[in-house]
Amino acid sequence: MLPAARRMRRSVDFERAVRRGARAGRSTVVVHLVRDPDQVDGPLVGLVVSKAVGNAVRRNLVKRRLRGAAAQHLGTLPPDALMVLRALPAASDVPYAKLERDVARGMAKALDRATEPAR
Image (cartoon, rainbow, N blue to C red; front, side, top):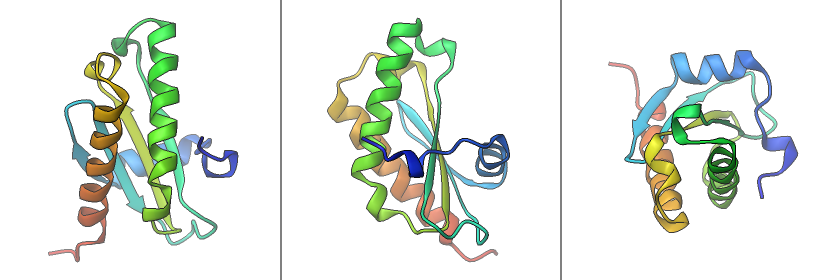
């Protein structure tokens, strides 16, 4: 499970990651990632699961799965990372293995884009 210290809670962190971060979309999830020099005590992960995903039971299932998938790959993130995982409606219908694979690939792609030098 995702440690409590790694969960994003402040709305300004969510806004910073979504608006200024690199974005990588997959079929079930969109990953927003920004490197913030003010954030030095480890990466933070936030989740966005809207009502488009399904009813409350489905949304909570997707949130649990996303937290688990993020926890598995937390070690690959730099300590200054702010990452938001935004679930798409397809996330409620796929097996965990597919969701975890999409999270891993999205994280890798967003991290590559976030660390590219500006052109």
